[in-house]
Amino acid sequence: MLKLFDSSLRLCAVPLSVATIWVTVTNQQDNSSYGMLKYYKFSALKYMVLVSALCACYALVAAACSWFRYYASKAWIFFLSDQIVAYLTMTSVGAISEIYYLAYNGAKEDSWSEACSSYGRFCSKVKLALILHAITFCCFFLLAVISAFRAFSVFDPPYVNSQEVQGD
Image (cartoon, rainbow, N blue to C red):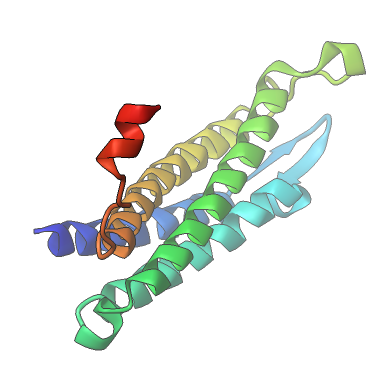
């Protein structure tokens, strides 16, 4: 049952990552006062596209490998790679959240005005990409927990001498 849930989460992360890439890459808006705004002008959006591509590729490979006995027995491989992908996804969600917050609210103390009133459609697509990427992060967070359980459940709990516990 856990293997099926694991594979389902991995396969669910693929369309979420592809949708995040599609929404981000096709995002552009022209404004007569300020000019054209495209995703590649923001390093955080480019980073999210890169991480989303990594997530989609890794999820496909890991889902396929999880059904082969040789790879399934190597729980530590999934543990390490799931942790890395979850952390990378978390960092890109944080970066995009900051960009979205600044675009929506501005930073008056730094003399940055908000940009979403001028680029409303662009901001809406960034918000959609952020939501899709956050859901992808949730998938990889659950996968990291599952792979940690698999990797460490093969070990016995530490032995504690009952006399030492009573003496303390």
